[in-house]
Length: 159
Ligand code: SME
Image 1 (spheres, rainbow, N blue to C red):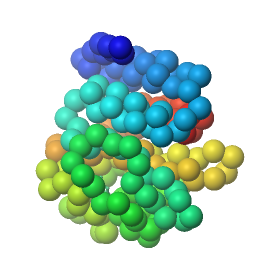
Image 2 (cartoon, rainbow, N blue to C red):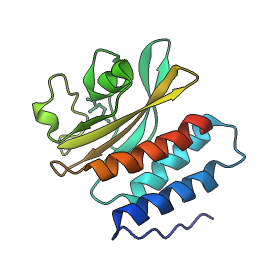
Image 3 (cartoon, rainbow, N blue to C red):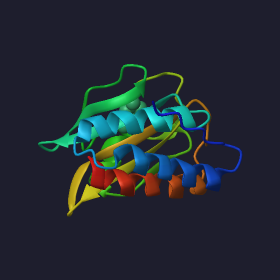
Image 4 (cartoon, rainbow, N blue to C red):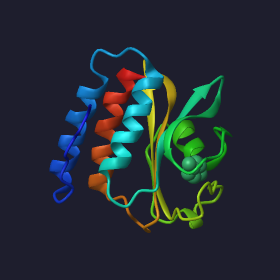
């Protein structure tokens, strides 16, 4: 049984503990789907005020839904669609304070108001993205971005 008790009171400490829990979860496991599934569950359980956490995988140049926690979601996106597509195409983190103001945003859960998407890149190849949604506007701060990028670095080696 994995029973991580991660305090969310101090954001920097929370992301440090989250990264260390994620390292532990994926250590020695070569199966990317298993690692994405556990990562989605861990992040969803730990981060306050999130309603969707999951992965889209680059399969033949299209983003295809992977393991996630939250409501059933859009299955396929091109690199020209959505916040996820923008992250995959630009290879840059997309931190969107108000998804309703983002041209091309794809609404999977009407409760979502802000979103952060981390591109996952290994050996120059976009493997996919980590997508996190929140019902709160401007939920994700630069500190969250740094924490999520650190999680992405672990995931790039584990998926
Ligand atoms: N909002 C995303 C689509 C995926 S869902 O949020 C799970 C986007 O615009 O890329």
